[in-house]
Amino acid sequence: MSGPRPKITIVGALPPPVGGVTVFLRRLTDSLESDFEIALLDLRNMDGKKPLFPGHIISPFRNRILAILWLQWRLIIQRQSLVHFNFSDVKALAFVAVLFRCSRITIATLHHGTKAVPRSKLWILRCLAPLIRRKIDVIHALNAEQRFFYQSVLGFAASSVFQCPTHIAPKLHGGAPGPEARRLLKDMRPYVLTSGVGNRLNRADLILQYWKNRPSDDLRLIVSIYGDIDSQYAAELQEMVDDQSNAILVGPMPEVDFNMLLKGAEVYLRPAEVDSFGIAVADALTFGTPVLASDACERISGVDVFSRADYSEMAVKLEALLLGQVDGSSKTHQSDRSKDYHNLYTRLA
Image 1 (cartoon, rainbow, N blue to C red):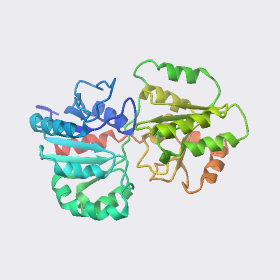
Image 2 (image 1 turned 180 degrees about the horizontal axis):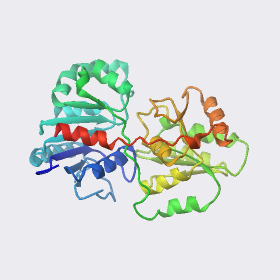
Image 3 (image 1 turned 135 degrees about the vertical axis):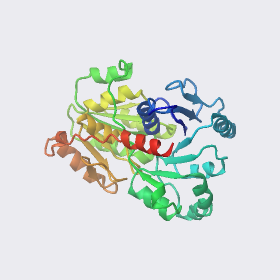
Image 4 (image 1 turned 60 degrees about the horizontal axis):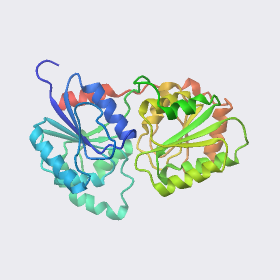
């Protein structure tokens, strides 16, 4: 681009040190920084949290109301041409609807999808829909199901829906691995890796239950949880891990460490009951790691899929992958969409 770079403000609430939204926004800002002046306003203030880059500004407030007021003030003073909101689910749209508009163009992305809305509450969204459409110019759908929701429930025109997965190619470089990754990789035994936000919807408990009853061999199971962890559920998982010899539970770790584990896995397993895309699924295929995932959402080409209503199907397909009866190693898939986001920002800003 020639001339001054357009000013872009990205808004989110980022859990450290890793998580789907954090990973996506870090990669997005890296891919855009040469052509855009980017500020990332982070609503989540937590102990030990550090900025990802100089334009990453963390709210000084932990109180939610004060953080929202701080965000509104920042949006007013920054005079950006485009604001891109990144939140978890549709409840956040009501929050966006009441903010004063402070840019020419507003985009919104809901990373955890639309399934969390009970049918009994849809009338509230429909009542707010005209206000939401006035505040949001482009709504970003991660898959066809989200696109249908935004058009049928919220009334967005087809031209106002940008459908694109949130996958921007991972990089293995970025510093030496941390002690957790070094410890796990030092053990030369092969392993299956599963990961997800630390709550029951990601069904790590079912995988551990299956692993306990699986015929014993040297294959390990590494369960990685992150994000907003349900402490009671995490304790339940730890108890299940302690009851068997070949399973390990690990907490949040830096992206470079997780990517090293992902690259070295025999299979990456994604058993979630609710999912919107699954960046780790696409990353695994990029690294050449076979992937077995539930049908909780539309999966990219190359993923072996099982019905989330039938975990016995998961067990059969997992063992087939491990025995080489399915050639998962040939399913390397490049799904980098950074150019799509660059083109969107260039067109709108």
